[in-house]
Image 1 (tube, rainbow, N blue to C red):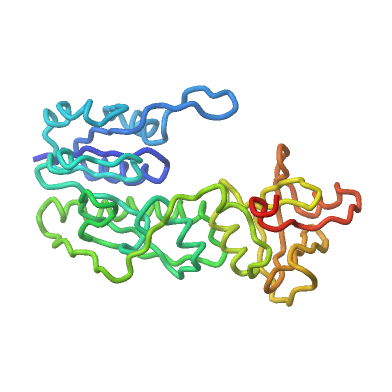
Image 2: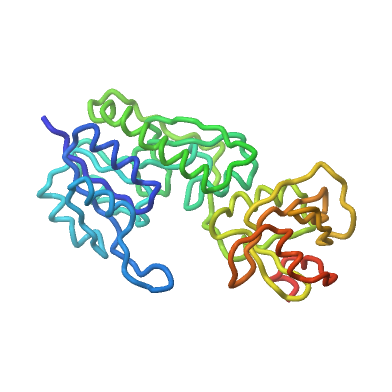
Length: 314
């Protein structure tokens, strides 16, 4: 008997999990967010899950409100509901509708990093590893019993972008391996422990600004956690703002006050509260990305330095 699955997901992260359901031979209906305006043209564009679902020949529903498709879901009579970065809270009625249950593919090792930005927060906190948790869904945010977990190391050079791609692929592997066991009743849900619960708060504009009084190691984690988007923000004392796209901490003592700059080849050294951070690539406001050294040479020798955390000192 063919398993019927409703898949709810929206961004690139969810695509490998959707593909796994198809490889398992499940009959899949896809629910994703409506098309939204994107780019400078503001033309409507489909979410990545919709684009891939149409390539796979799957039916796609894009309701503004999930309750608008509840009757359609009931008629489909799903065995299982699978979510991955869908972007909306599911009602109790929807969670109780599938014959077997509803599961979520979450990008952390729960109970650590429940919430909206688990990949970025794990890098920023300096975690040595993270992973994928397949959990049984409940109404409370990411608090459901754990069905399976898979781990991956966070490398010193990982950005949110590179770690996202690793975890997206791992999410597909976890679905392919463990969903059949869950549907067959061979996975025993394990309640999440009360100890170790942390929350991955949504990133804000305030989070983007670099505070040069912090250590170079902390700043490096911030830059990597915000790369490639939205990017860590900094500003010169002249007022010019820029994104710090990449760099590295150096095992050197500070050479001046926090924010003082020295040019070194194609990079820029910035003195921090502890250590030195070497900026490799920047994107000045309204301009293209470029090597930090080229940006510095374009200033034509102006004696400038980095400002502090901009929202606090404007």
